[in-house]
Image (cartoon, rainbow, N blue to C red):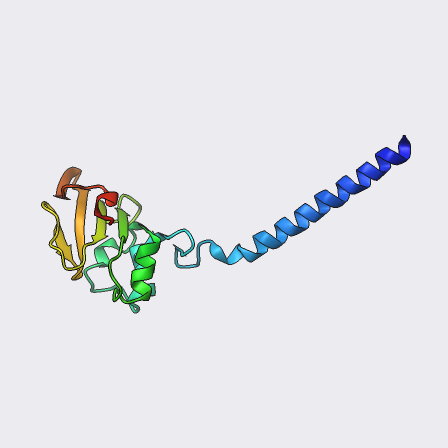
Length: 169
């Protein structure tokens, strides 16, 4: 009976060791799929940084003297789907796209603007913007924009429908 338990214990120890070694390899392969030094997690489709870190990465140079300067310390959270990635990779030349992006800006941080905003963008191609929204960047529409300025909540845009899924084919 002792040899049977010893054999089971050795097999179990081998299985556990193999699991942890393979899990470690899996985690090591995914180590580069988290957030980078700027704030992007391309795997998850998320940016979590500041306007200044975004500006330096995407536009380059100093934020001084730009329209973004007052927001330099504001926290910027952006989320997008895989269709947004596909469109960017193709320079938006192979429509249609079921692409969306959400931006949330929080200026209620030390040194921030004091403002808070949420934006929702969808790809609409050559179609007009939905009622209550407006076109931006040529083939996109703002379907929702609202925020707080001087502690007053402002609805800038509330298109109908305001849900992201309503714009997908």
